[in-house]
Length: 143
Image 1 (spheres, helix red, strand yellow):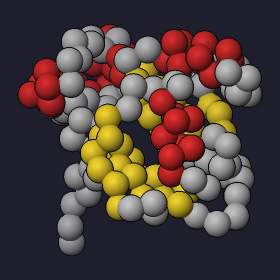
Image 2: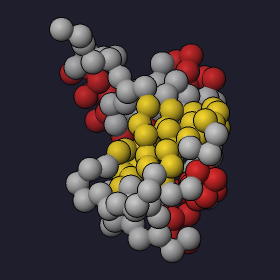
Image 3: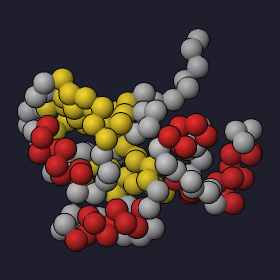
């Protein structure tokens, strides 16, 4: 049986690739890995990526969602609110993009998710974990 070791990418269905890239760039620094014509775009997250895939009809996710890890969750909240995007109440930060994808934003220092030192360095990240996140990593033998 194979062991799950991580997520390579998540694909989000959007109505228009260029419009989606512009929309997400309002809230996050985007590094475009590449494109597959007008059908897909790939946004780097260091050693992982998000694929934006052109789809037909809009959908609305209720429970299905994906989480993005950021260095400053409150900066994202502020940018979303200023843009008129409806967000959840603190301490969580959830929102829907214009195509119905539900996104949850978490702060790197608060979760067990960890970038390898070389990847973090290459991304220009110098972030510390909270004591709670460090304990969670220790308890699982991951630190």
